[in-house]
Image 1: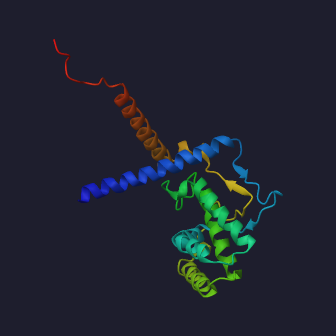
Image 2: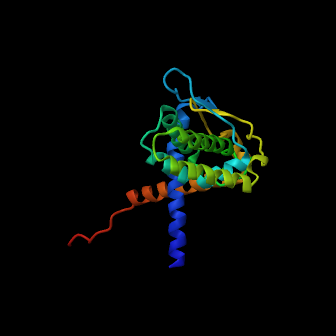
Image 3: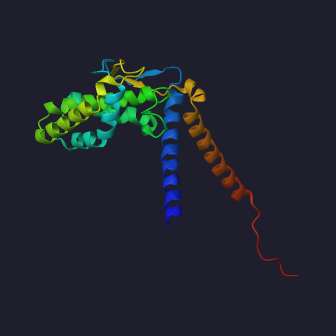
Length: 220
């Protein structure tokens, strides 16, 4: 039924976002003093530079991200650079709540826009690095050509935002700008709603645990 389907979809989204929230908050608490947090890279502190990504390019990469990661995962000859870029994308994508917070991609004022730039810049760098792999280069070339055409059609290089000139590095994880959440209504509403859901679930759980158990009256 349409009503049930809509509720199920909303519940699924809420569950995914709550899961991402709880895990990301756990990570954030361990390193709350830094906005850019070192992930250690290869143990030497040196990471792989990742070129900047314009706002328009970010949208194109986001549309093709699933395909890019799928192609990367099918390759059997990934070099060290590609493996580290792939790991960075996973880590950064998770740390940015998997793009689930409204406005993360399209709103440059979103506290999650910079970290979205980071994982999408890493995804583009991964796609370009895949051209050096020993796997199915025909599949990689076809995807590179498709992304390139999408960039041209959308004038992606010309659509800029405040993070368009920022480069990244696999040794640094970019966390959301938490101090900007209260000033960004969509983000504030999202976390306010999640707090309400979590609080309601806890309250119901406690209520059920403390509710008296009814049973048959003792025989007189």
